[in-house]
Every structure is written in structure tokens, then in C-alpha cells.
Length: 395
Image 1: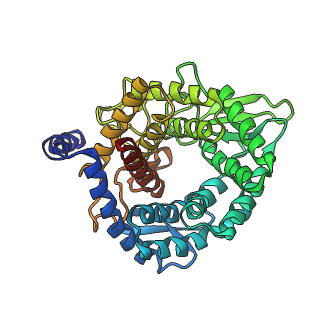
Image 2: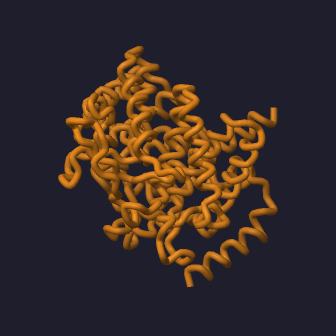
């Protein structure tokens, strides 16, 4: 039944949306996000010091600011403000960013980058204030406390005793905070940690086909890996799609921030692996895990699709013309899919969230086939990146 429904959605897409330009679709979708996130903000306002996480059982699920996703909702509001120039949205972005600010002192996990840089990196870019700069620098100091020079990596978790020093591929996403903090402060220690971490991950996280492990644990006495496993994927050797999305995004971003060619080369390798994957669906929105035996009836993960899409748009600007056209073409296909009724929610459908069909942690039966706040964030980012790129190239 699920496969049949997606078939109808694709047919609708081909008959209706493909008559429009992708830029037009992007513009229409960005206008919808104003209404949706205004609605979601009204709900969130009822819960002091909490931020939206997902939508389940007909209600918005809120989380404490210390939860790893706390920065995505205010970060998305900043993106929507960038698109709309709506002062009411800006006020909401400021209001909800303030709820996440205290996480600048977080030292017990690696997610301070998500928590702080998603809202305050965008806030500093769109509405520069000295306080935003100081928040980012403090967050970078906090994140740096998790770096072990012997291992050369930032430790991800403290609460998983099965691993001596776990490092997850997601951690690549938090390196942007460190690079930005060096630019803002002149303190090169943040940048050096980011480089060390990216190099160690490049060396130890990837298989020969350029898929990546979710978790690599290290021996703190030798600095060498002692386990390569998963936490959220199907099994230790499977290709968990959001992990692959963090990889392509992380190395594309690190090339932008450092201009080190090895990061660009890695991003291209991961892009080619993903685009040519035999289990990648035609609309380029991946299954939650490429090794799920239920494929083609396995769940899709729109959040992974959104992250890949945003990364491909960025990567398309760093590569030769032929690859640029190829990567942008895939991203356009993803945008059209995510903007279709198969994935894009109506205003009143899921509490104001934007994308349907995200998969958070399927093996734990947590956040399965629901909207995810980080899916929304990278989706809106992808729309803005695409629009900016097309506008710039049309001049």
C-alpha cells in the first residue's frame, strides 16, 4: 500500500509540479513555511524553555533546550526570516534562539554545534550583534573541552559505556562552529581541532566504497580505533542514510571553511557513492537505511534527503562544470520531490512542521515516520541555497 501511495504521489508530481520551474516551486514553498512556522511557534510559546522536536499522536512534541535538536527550530525561523523579511518571524527567531542560548556552556556532549551555531550563526549573519559573536565563541570553547589530543577526535557521548571513546559521523556537522569561532576570535585552536577531527574521521570512518560507519570508538591510550559499529542504523555494517548525509554535508562544509582539497575530494567521493547507489530511489529521497531488507517498501527518511540536497547544492559550486550540473540536477530532483504532496505538509497537517516522513531512530522505535525539526532546517536551507545560486547565476 505504501509503495502504491508513493506511486500516485510521483504521478501527481509529474503531471503538475514539473510544469513549473524549480525556482517557482521554491518560492511557493518558502511562502508556505511562514504560515507553518508561525503556527508551530504559537504552540511552542505555551511551553516555556522548551523547543519543538517532532509531531506524534496528533500533538507537537517539545524538548528541553539541552536536547540535541534544540537549535534547529530557531535556526529554521532565521532562515524563514531571510526568505520572507517578515519582522514578526525575526522576532520569533530571536525569542526562540534565546531559549537555546544557555547551551553555549554544554560540555557533556558534542551537539553544542547544532544547538548554538544553527540559531546564532544565522542570527549573526542576518542581524549582527556582539552578543551573538560571544555566544558562538563560548560554545566553541565548550565543544573544545571534548577533544582528546591522543585520539585526535571530539568525543560524542559520555553515556554509552559499551564504547571507550565513541565518535559518530554526525560530529562532522559541529566543526563549522569551531571554524567560525576562529574567524570571529582569531584563536586558531578551534580551527586546529576541527582539522584534526575531520582528518581522523576521513581516515577511520569510511569503508572502501565511501559509505561510512555511524560510530567509531577509540582506545584512549593508543588513539587507534577499537570498534566500528552503529547506534541508529540497521546493523554495524549497514549504510544508515542520515549518517551518509552527515558525511557529504560535513566534508562539503569543511572545504568551504578551510579550502583544503582533501575535504573536497572526500565530499565528491561520498556524493558519487550516494548518487549512484543501487538502492537510491528515483526521486533521490533515500530509504532510512540502504540495507533494509524491506526495500522497496522500507521507510524513506526525508531528513536525510534534505541534508543531502543542501550539501549537493553547496558542493555543486566547488566542482567543474560537468559535475556541478550533475549535482545540481540531483538536488533539483530532490527539491521537487520534497516540495510535492508526498513529503510537504499542509499547514494544519502536522502541527506546523514542514516535512513529513522523517525517521529518527528506527531500531529503538523512536520518531519513526514523523516530521523532524532538523529535516525542516536543512530543507529550508536547501531551498535558500538553491534560490541564491540560481539568482546569482542568472545575473
